[in-house]
Length: 322
Ligand code: ADE
Ligand code: ZN
Image (cartoon, rainbow, N blue to C red; front, side):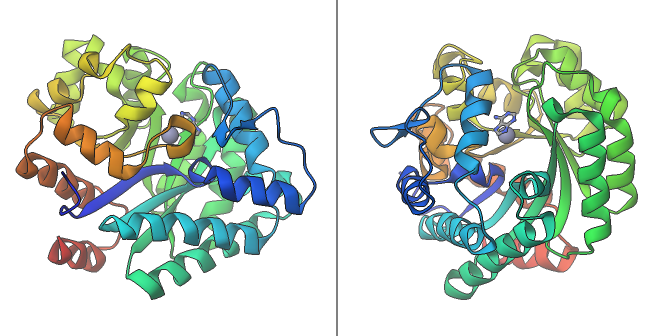
């Protein structure tokens, strides 16, 4: 039972959190056929590439700023209901451009959703703008430039997501220079689909404060020590890793081994309905399957607040609520 614990989530893709019922209602509203991607209340995909395709198709039924406000408010309300005090949402202004809404209207809709959710429950949230590897370095640079120019106080981080097998982190380093200069916290998806080398790549080329997943660092003892020494925080999403077959089962998942080796870890849900999970379930797994005590789970939540991309006053306010 973890319902009594306060929670923090650092790694969740906004469109990846879209409840299937809401997606279906949106598809009906716009008369879009998504039957190949959403069947019997569940998203349909079979491997990492088809997951990314499904994710992009599903995202297309969210079209207006109000659609994004509703999606954001809905997810944050769900988080607040289970005792979550802080959420970082991974967003893609590029996606807003691709669907013809425009990056500004996309972000404005998301921010409106954050304001509405905060007014009801007090949940604090920030945005991490992401570039997608599979759209290439120029598009990732564009995302960083957009975020840097936006001057939006709720955008506090920059990420690299998408097809990890495309290119090396060094190809995207320029985007991270722009993001770093703009004062954003940096995090990179690595060591999820690709092995330990990909995490080492991220440290060599960018050295972000956090790594999305990073769990395949377990394949390299020297790298584990490097992560522990640097204090790099891993945003670990066990349910996602099992759904995507990064590991065959929870028994083989390295979250406990990483924590025991001194690596700073936090728990998140990634794209919850796509992976038949939720932040609530991830906390339950931490307790029931990985056998972490309440004190250990609280320690991971504290790590989440320490590593949150927020100003110091907000960080202290979050600690006070824990
Ligand atoms: N985009 C959405 N979810 C993702 C994941 N788990 N890995 C990489 N890119 C993603
Ligand atoms: Zn992710």
